[in-house]
Length: 398
Ligand code: UT7
Image 1 (cartoon, rainbow, N blue to C red):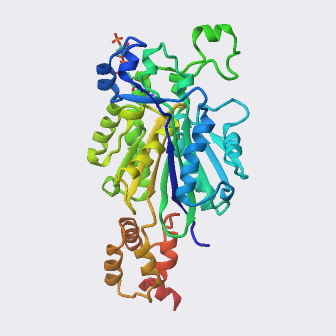
Image 2 (cartoon, protein in one colour):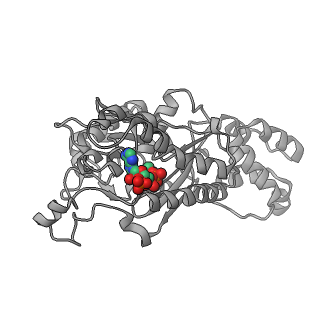
Image 3 (cartoon, rainbow, N blue to C red):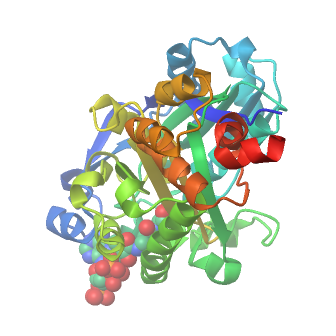
């Protein structure tokens, strides 16, 4: 059976109109534009209007992604909504989104905090890779401003609302989601929590009086965790893809804090030119942060056809998640190689592959160096299509 890859065929974003600047916050809590800028890099964030909900923002981003993919809601086979700020605890917001979109497919919610979009992307990819579904919509959305205590300067300066969505569709050439790394470490989970909502605590006036229905955070603990796992997870996902940091065209980190990103970038040794940041405009939009950045990076021309984009995030749980995605359909060259007559001259094949995209080049080199068939899921199509043309395949056939 041919390997099925999941290509990003559609993308869209939505941010509320209302802008809350650092100067606005100076009037609300004991803070300053200088402190927020120096400690976080954030200058402004968007805040949802009273008549907006998580589902309305998700649906707005989803419509745009579907338009780009040239699909209608009824074409969808699955909807995954990643959020920690749903409209209600029950019913799940993914079903509300499915209904509001007018889709007729299954839908579920992924709740892993800021890593939710990458967890959702990884999950959607599995459904496509196994052949279970064709058109999967993955949304990262957060209306976190309703869980923020606007009198707590430790948290209220950090967060904002927004939504980003992608449509995944199957492709039989290697593109789209190339590798993932997911992780969880619940030991320090309560360092980023809404302690009073859920079954661990009966919701009563004491909970409300203590403000335990709001987001609480031990910023330093989360900061230390983030600066450790961001580079670790990036290196792991690169290893899983058989790539090095030099193969990455753009790094899209979770947009939480420019200082966290800066430390991670220095540890990874990637040029800051290859790192995308829009947290200055939106703050930390949790599960929406990565897709919002992905869409804006594309809109600003920072992602081109065939580019390898590495997304890396950390968040509540505590969790981490990263993914390497190849943008577009860059493998025309490899299709050309596969359509040609058998190539027995290994150097000719090497030259051909060297002219193909970076992704193919990496896999081809690995293929030649590892003559034993150590099939990774990403390499199967090349083995099946190109492998039969190599000298050892010929011997085998005899
Ligand atoms: O998606 C994951 C979500 N969470 C995060 O990404 C958070 C990760 N952590 C961070 O980004 C940082 O820890 C913060 C930005 C939250 C805080 O920066 P920091 O450099 O770790 O500051 P701090 O917590 O060590 O606080 C330093 C000082 C404290 O005052 P004292 O105790 O030294 O007198 C704070 O009370 O800064 C004070 N402070 C503020 N001052 C002005 C805390 N928040 C503010 C504020 N304005 N908004």
